[in-house]
Image 1: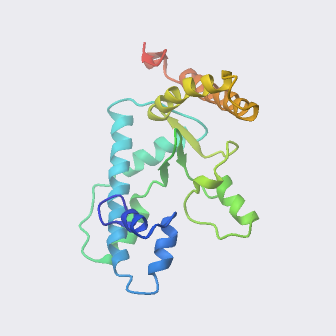
Image 2 (image 1 turned 135 degrees about the vertical axis):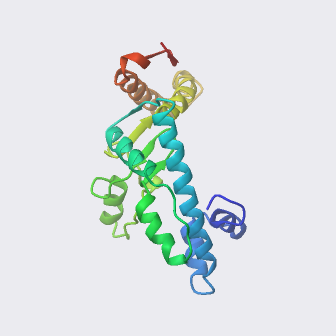
Image 3 (image 1 turned 180 degrees about the vertical axis):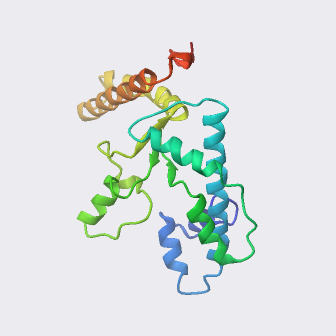
Length: 211
């Protein structure tokens, strides 16, 4: 899905805004190529899970937010997965079910998806739309209880904060945009403060650096 000739490449080739369109577009013909995509998804899940656990276990990456504990639990569970030899396509689905942590990297936020609490899923159901198995960024809201924030997410917030603060103070920027930038900056400050406040004393950060 993220490799050359994968699903994303196909979507770009056909000019589709979402990969779901590509899947629907191709499903009525020869869909054997979807088997390759399933394998790529399995590879992606395993690689991401390994990276997340390495950062937690070896690099002592801090995680905060409503689902921080669940993030650690799922990552630890995925670390126990030692890999299997895939001899048949039917094995891919089973291995995905065993190894998929359902953790999704977002924009300065990590979604530890839980269907029962996902605001995006509830939004789709209210609109009469089919609810997918995973999150939908278009319907992501601040009120959702599924986010977690890694040190990587906080670093991205720190990069975005000065930009928003400048926009909020710029007299040439229209008032609605200034107000929105100010609100976003305030929210980011809260996320950063809560992240650092929940950090273990031994690794407490000051000004973005480990004390």
